[in-house]
Length: 73
Image (cartoon, rainbow, N blue to C red; front, side):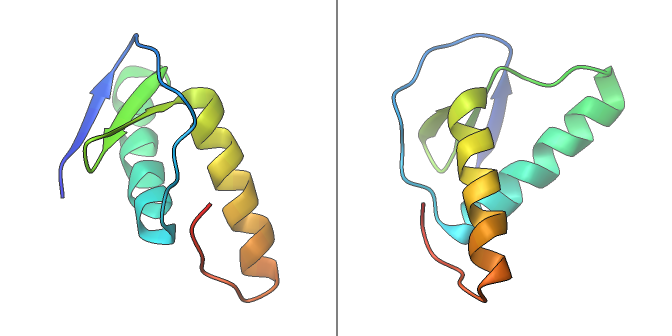
């Protein structure tokens, strides 16, 4: 699985699996720890994800986990 970080870009809303959200979270946390900055875009499995789309997916995934659901968002 390839995950690429960039600091600029534009993407439309994409559907992410639970695993893709989880992996993107780890990469974003690592990048923020190293640089002190959160990337504005990540690429997960060839899907371009803006920070807004990622935040929506991450919060929706958290809500779903509270209902014991691991599903795509």
